[in-house]
Image (tube, rainbow, N blue to C red; front, top):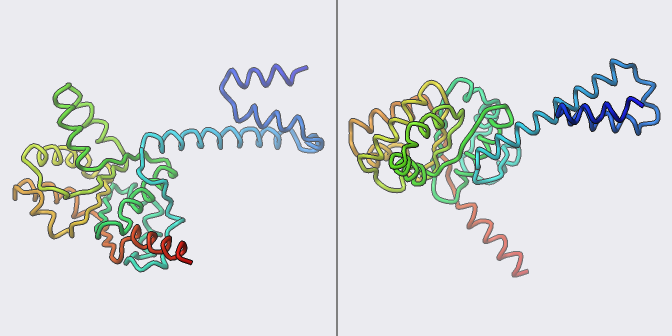
Length: 251
């Protein structure tokens, strides 16, 4: 008589994991062979697992990663200049804990954005928050936020995000307003959070694309000097896949 009311109470308390586990135990013939403490432990384990899964789903949804990428899926057979030991080190997310940055450069199509999303996805799995933004879109959002009064709130949101991906860095030379916005963002995050930037431009060209020498020094000081640097090389992965598809069809 107690079983169904207990399930109802667990649902009302939003202990959905425990409720599901209890329902399964009810349908397990030999469950009575386990001690009370063992059965309770199984219920608690299920609840903890489901809550963490919900939190992870929420973090990934808010991150809005461009690719559903995972570090475990990296193909090291394709020569791109990837240092496996470095990737394995980054997979521990110690860089996020220490508030360090990661900069990924290389030609178009070589997998910069995919790798950035894989690193951010691993951070989400470790309990950190992340957000993906292309630099042109980010700067556009900053300009709109100034107009509608959301600028301070947007800065605060970016400042507390554990891993911020800034994709497509350096597609166009920055204007004065963009330089100031970037400095505000990076100043708030410096030493507190991690920034992950991708660019087709080599690092030595970043100073030039920012424009103003003084602001360029300030921006790069907060972004580059405490960063892991990954320079990808080789043929575009998209072109390579297209060739493979064409070859397969030809057969």
